[in-house]
Length: 159
Image 1 (cartoon, rainbow, N blue to C red):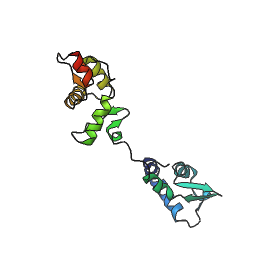
Image 2: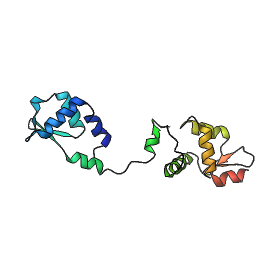
Image 3: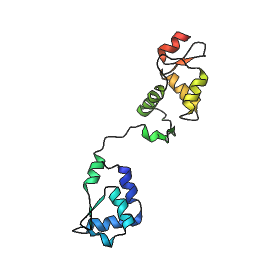
Image 4: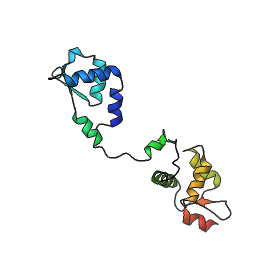
């Protein structure tokens, strides 16, 4: 199934876009000999064009298929290369993000503040804010003496 980003990327180059337009407007497809192979290959690789019988032909159904794709995870836009680049101020995405971060902490295990800092620092530099948000939302709980953190029931037992 075509990925929308791959389609856009393939058409982002002006020369490839013009070639794609020529292929789309040719009634029986564009003769392969009349197209730069390197540009055409990228269009073929993206699924926008097929090559058969020495002719390139557009594949309009690829756009429908890309749009029919299952919705992306709403958290994907918050991460780049495994690092959190944006913390939502409120709402459903913030709740999903915090629940996702809470999964980094095993149920039944207690963590020191240093452990929590290390786990959250792997995701974002502002580990203190993430820790505070997790505690505020009740997804991570601090023991009464402040020395241990854990999922809600585990932290209470330690304090």
